[in-house]
Amino acid sequence: MALQWGIIAPGGIVEEVSPFVFYDGGVNAIRAVASRNLDKAKAFAEKFSTHGPVKAYGSYEELIADPDVQAVYLATPTIPRKILVEKCAAAGKHVLAEKPLCPTANEVEEMIQKIKGKGLQFLDATHFVHHPRTHAITQVLRDQSLLGHVTDVTSSFIANLPETPTQIRFMVDQEPLGALGDLGWYNLKLTFLAFDNLQPESVVALTTPASPTNPAIMSMTVVLKFPDLHVPNSKPIPRTARFVCGFNGSSLVQSVVVQGTKAAVEWSDFVHPWSYVARRKNTRVLDTKTYPLEYKICKRAGHVNAQVVTVENADAAGVDYLFRRFKRAVDEGGSAPDITSMLQADVLVHRTIDACIESRELGGVPVDFKGKSGARM
Image (tube, rainbow, N blue to C red):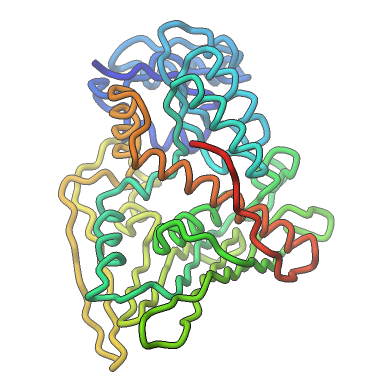
């Protein structure tokens, strides 16, 4: 039976992902939508009522109280998210929430404890970690016979998004983490995927504000220092990561290089497959084409070996895999190991974001990582 969804705040992201998730109503189905603008909710409900009626609400609380809604896709700005997740938990609703989850890691831990304490499922809506392309590259990163031990991750996620009066990403009262929370979230997810959720020791962050009068984070450069790697019969090997995220690029950049003790691997589209980027502005229908993953293995001698892995019938951005995994979690109940690991990674990402903000406020000096927590997922 399909999981019955309610969607809160149907903005641009929801418009983009919905055709890839709710295309037949057989696995995941929209049953209600809520916007503070009732006309907007009605328009969305009409558009996605192909596989059954969709109720439209003019308040979030009405949707949360709807007994026909089993799970809520929460796509609001960051600031109101924690309160709404807690309201969903009180009403017995599972929640899939957009990122960043909250302004601070402490709030994230409190929020997760509230909803998990009710026996409900919770996930952040980071799609690329669920895609078979990411699973394929993870196998490469874990192959010590090929890559050795991971020692450095360098990534960039940069887009072109000018500051405008209506662009919510530059409104610090709604999105206080700016480009760090929006784009840097992906860099951090990738970094901790490569380092298998290893905690850093220190963080340095340098920021470019949106304008002299707007402190919103337009771009940020971050360096993470991890504990040295100790291997037999060798000196300690430094481990680091660095990334750049920002809205001030001339074009989209989503590249990564992972260095290992034996080789390096690099690829150029760690968030969105380039084939999807080329089409997504012109399509709103399910796309079941193949999405190849192309990466290069670089050995110390300079030899480059290009590898191509083709993923058959794969949704472009991984959102279908994300929602399907969430439905399985609801059907199975309990706390699956992979879901628990993802929630632990969420807290780790937010602890790192906290450190980035602290470093920024101190003028870009290194800060110790305050990642230890007694929270239980």
